[in-house]
Amino acid sequence: MQRAVVAVTGASGAQYAVRLVEALSEANWEVDLIVTNAGSINLDLECSMTPEELANRKGITLHDNKNLAARPASGSAKYDAYILCPSSGTTIGKIAAGISDNLATRSALVALKERRKLIIVPRETPFATAHLEAMAKMSTWGVIILPASPGFYHKPKTISELIDFVVARILDQLNIEHELGKRWKGTEVQKNSK
Image 1 (tube, one colour):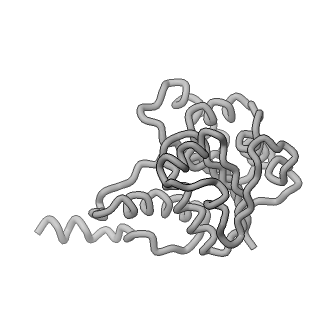
Image 2 (cartoon, one colour):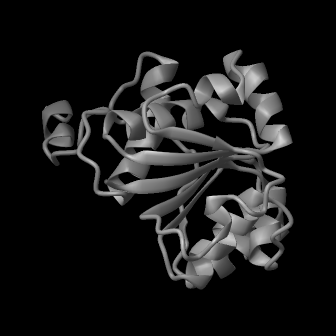
């Protein structure tokens, strides 16, 4: 069974995290879920949901962000991926500086030291130069920087379709088959240009 760490931090965009956790659960992945204090505020504000409600799905285990003895804090615990979704600029800066003062940042640094897949989904806008430099630095380390920037070529009609667009890109990075939106075929422009 595949296993991931998903950390929800303080950036706006908690709906991306909710949909990602749902999709991973549906794909039969085990998920160790971490929600920071600010992530919890946004989860409530944007989704009217508690971390416990988000974790109330098959294969999801919620961890206290203060517990640096939890399974995601150890390199000996095997995970296929670590995903910070959404990731605040503060969390990005801490990881790039090697600061692991909570379980979310510690798990990301474990991913780095163990050379495992780390996906960071920033949702800040605009980015401060410090955030851009931190993301560029982490990209050179092999971190996948996947901004929560939905496309529009699929002509979305709902917010859910915009959320699914970003979550689909995350699932693609994890090699999870899904049907979250249409894939580009290359014939769309030809059809529309006639």
